[in-house]
Image (tube, rainbow over the protein chains, first blue to last red):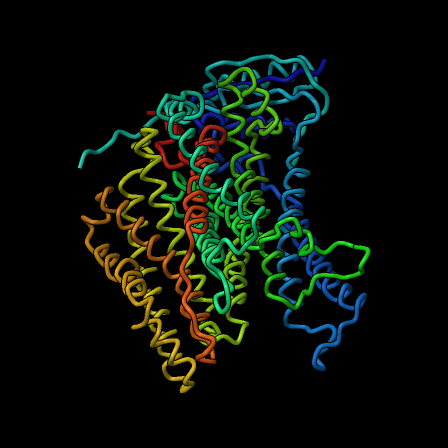
Length: 176
Length: 441
């Protein structure tokens, strides 16, 4: 029966050691919870990549285009020739394009962040308030009793202060 | 100097959550006073002007722009350093940024809101504000996107949105930390704001990536905003305003006044929320160095502006310049030079930079000087246009002075509410600067 184990540590390097041990033993769904971003987590749990940069890039492109089309399009909807100047002047419209480009890029980055970090959390997920203060937590999904026992041994060996067995809440949001 | 003991991780949470939940009578007194002043000196005079007409202000031919626009430029300028400085220091990975950036970003947000309000006041018939927005209407008329005023609308909208997103994304982990410590309506509020943040390695990674991207986007945006504001003036052909140097001149001035604003705010936060362990003399020392650099840059660009006018050989430019330096507004001009270029030179001495009260005084004087600068840009130029029979003098009326004072009170009001809702010091980033519990002792 699947279960989740939560190990709490008072030192970051103990938590990292436990995470490394679990990963080496073949556990796939491991989350490391900490009060600050942890340095060295990538060496232990592998390098992470995210799609946020693509959101930013395409947001910027869409914004640049939308800004220019807004200025140029509205100028052609109501033609107002002024002193022989062009109906669609490039330099001023580039300013509009630039501002709307950044606006869209910011909003797309926010959207990309929320999507890739799976926020807002739409279903219940395990967490512990101590990891927002001064503790470091390891949350690992175990598929069987034997797995849970192996994980418990590794977590305790790394120096966990406390270990909790939690109800399995479905497929966890563990992404690499 | 007394060396303060560094707090532990748990103390950081205790200290910062305390600033949110423990509210003394002094806070309510300050908030009540600020609210009352903003109603009496900002909203009531504005309402009076809406009812009576914009003629209540001292603006008239040739000075069709007056203190309302000076207020607008001043608040936009003050908004500048917060998010910009935070973004620059994030990218350069300066550790001293961590304790101060949250409040600085809030300053940006509220200063932008006040700046927009000042623009509505200047419009006179504020109920036609939507005419500046591009939306389909029955007259089939669209805003003129060739106008720098429309550049303003787009730039300020983008900057306000960008600053809000930057502030919010950076605060999500702190909202989660507060969520677990409070109860009642606060619990619901922070549960909503924290979006279910758990602080997993994946979430921290995504936050780091998104935050860096936002910082990179914010920097050119902030520079563009004040450049665009400068073009409101520089794209006219009024002598004294028609200078190509105006964009960097405005940007430097904005960062200068914004940094001085941060110093003032840091002083008050440190004093009234007992945050001595977090906002240290190192912060004031570093901000003092930055202010010194900016004062020299500001003085250089001012001299450049004067020399450009002087060497232009244009009689109109030279007349405007003479008027600025030796005319009716000369005492204001030399006062500005004293406050923004001479007094800040004292910051070269470390003792001045680390004396908090001196830093407070210098920062306030710089912002007084910067307000004068914004007023002078408009008054000295519009008062001396090409034709001598079209010359005039502008003096702000009581309504205009009152609205400026009221806008300061309104800003204080916003800020006082902010410090009770958003942790004013970033907990997780301050923890990064502390002795991490990552080595067994």
